[in-house]
Length: 264
Ligand SMILES: [Zn+2]
Image 1 (cartoon, rainbow, N blue to C red):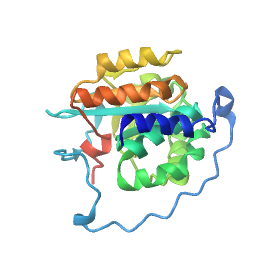
Image 2 (cartoon, rainbow, N blue to C red):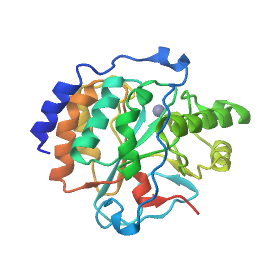
Image 3 (cartoon, rainbow, N blue to C red):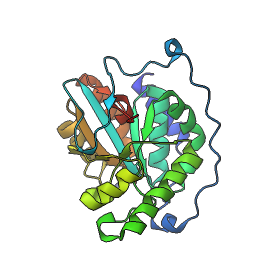
Image 4 (spheres, rainbow, N blue to C red):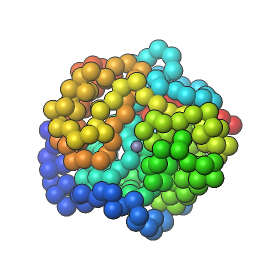
């Protein structure tokens, strides 16, 4: 789709999107949205095409902050999800442009359940992938073992029930705050790969669309993992220009699951 068409689509579709869910959502109950039954795995020659020239290698045990090997790929990774407009805009971007995204949601935000039906086909085709970011976004280094595990397990339940995501090798510690103890707990629960980043939208504070585009200009480079947050509506206004940047730099978006497969 032409980028202008995407912009118009955003303008038409987002006026009704949920907005402004903030800290209050932390205490909200888990959204009750049943994930669809998994479709049978198609034969190899009918699998949807993944990104060109990308062959997945086993996900490593330990910390990663960039994509493996040479290439012209870019991993856009989006965390949290406290703003419904931003989540809906990203889902629309993926649907309409084929952009590949990796989400690290906190299940405590209802925005994910609100967008689940649109996400399901993207998950099924592998165009979007997921990692665990804990249920309610604590600094896990400050929690006892049992609470770290509970934060991860509760978010696993959310990923499975709401989005149909049954397993992922990836987790991202909130605030990037982790240590050997938290990483071992995550690995025991099926997340051996601690995903950090080497580029950022720096949107842990309030940012303008122009600042987001400037961050893209700084950090959209080959084999980068860039972190952003679906936490404020300014992201919506920046998406078209950010996508243009990916095109002009001749980068190819990939999910983390495109480049790293779950260990057998
Ligand atoms: Zn986060």
